[in-house]
Image 1 (cartoon, one colour):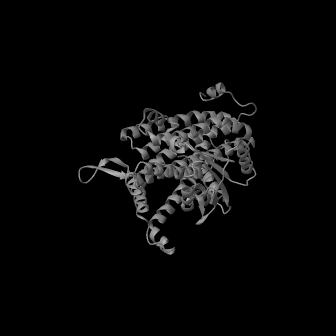
Image 2: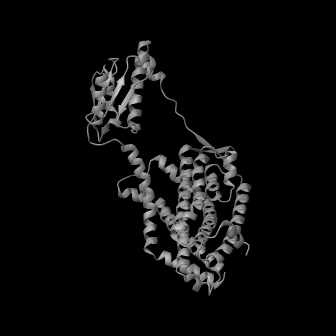
Image 3: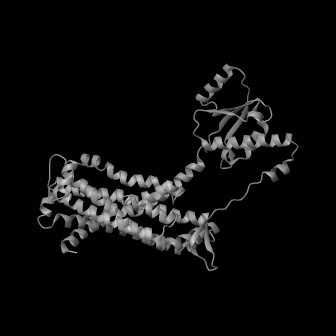
Length: 443
């Protein structure tokens, strides 16, 4: 590789690695990802749980539901906060339209949180009506629905002559465990399987890596675009290309910034490995003796699949980064302002967002025809094919073909983009049309 390209790589790499933004991102990005995960779980489990007492009015026209319902709510965790009951049930009657209107006014004035109407024909029609200022508290509604259903079901069984003990025995749930069949042969000559926990750990690792790829491309490809745009608008690029060819400058930028991403990721992997190796001593500091068996299985699965997953990740990350970043660099070269660049980069962002959204369909049917076809589209492959490898490993020949196709696409994109970049960085004024860009690519 020419010394001039190495000089550009070194400059791009050292400038970014020594910046405060890199140091901050090194710690803040994994921290923010953990915070988002724990915050979403925390908010889901803690929604509607406050110290404020909330009054629920129950209009029990059957005269059989309120008492067992009140007893069930007193023991249900959804209606408690730190062991204290925060929902108070009140039985009232509302037979006229004026009384109903009065209840609605009390809801709007926050005198009561909500009211529940249990009609006389509940045991036949099975329909109760819940009224509140908002119906987005799904956890509360689900808990009320389950409690009412249990009470009505027990009443129906009792009327049919079944005892509570017989009902519990007949209604006992079936344990359902799912296992994924591995393609590799086990020591016994049979086929190995993995539990749902192990599958979830493997897919979770893949999802985290895909999110890292998505995040790095969005942040650092945009950084390359802004760098090119700044050099063009300040006309510094005219001085730079007097001593280096445009395509060498572009390659230097791409390799330099990609090295920054790989450096950050390598540090994260190193910290992750050290954390897993020393997990028991670290837990001992907090007085915890070892992990539960489920977590031990998760860590074992991650250890087993990490090497192969990381190998594919680096391949698809480098290919995806060069493919997307090259096009972002072209956006910076053909635009004259930040506003123009934001408009032009919209379609490029879709190339990243579409496979990220399709990934959730892939989880459900990883071997469907549409999933396989989309995963072989080079612009979607870094995300979709990588997740296919984690969810349901395709044949090796298919992976090799996909990598070759993606590699050829990267070279083609870099070749065409390099020609457009060479002309675009020296062009000012009106933004070029698609026809003009096609002409530039043939120079």
